[in-house]
Amino acid sequence: MLKKSLIMMGLVVFTLGLLAQTVEEAGAKYNEGNELVKQENYEAAVPIYEQAMKMATDAGADAADLRGNIEKQLGNAYYRAGVSLYKDKKIDASIAILEKGYAFGQQIGDEDIKNKTADLASQLRSKVGDSMRKKNNLDEAYVEYEKALTIDPTNVKAMYGQGLVYKEKNDLEKMKEKMNQVIELSDGSDKLQKMADAARQTTANALEVAGAKELQSGDAHKAIVLINESFTYQPGEANAYYYLLIAYNKISEWENAIAAGTKALELKKEDASEIYFGLGQASEGKGDAAAACEAYKNVTSGPNVESAKYQMTQKLKCS
Image (tube, rainbow, N blue to C red):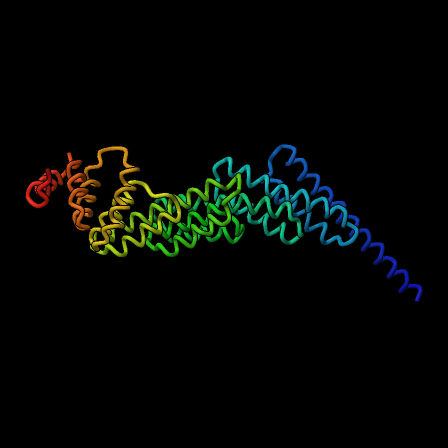
């Protein structure tokens, strides 16, 4: 019995000795990481802190305080290493270590580390997406934007990038869905208002261009719907109202055509001969010969000069 007790005591002492040794080794490894941080070698510090974390975890309750210190330093090292790699233009490596830091922050419940690493990793994913989109690698770009939003669902730059992908694919409905999200999240924010403004401008321009294409292909009704919808995003310019003038003329909605032409004239800063010709047609269609003559007289340049003269001299007999 005495022999068994002595053996048990020996095992306990041995185990305590091992634990003490493990805690001591974890502390030494932690200090090694701290020295690398002092040298601003954050990338090298990360695996050292990771080793220290494993040692402290293995040591159990005796290393609880040390583990807390390691967690804090490791979280900061992930973030600082990510920043350092980004500054060195090592984007992929930066993203990898930041996303590792994000996962670590989630694991230990550290909101500060989680938010810092998530924000930067998400922004870098967006940059990668932008680069791919500019090379016309649209599907790959969309995936990068989606990864950015997985980490940070409020990343409006990634949403805007996805909207641009849909714009390039001529998917207006999905483009509007993404741009509307950008506007909703950014409107009224001092930091993000530019994103809301960009989303409005991009959407309005895309709708106007789509309307012009429909007009060119002969569908005046679709053109009118698209161009009027563009005005819900931002005030229209002279060209948009000119397209409306032409579209309304095509379907004989003379009053709407005259209203659109009048607005186009207000906004036009250069020669407006093409607008006056459209107004002449609208006024003529309405049966207002005097207004038609007045409009045609202002057609002084461009391809419609002779047509305007013909209407005035041969059809309307303008004085």
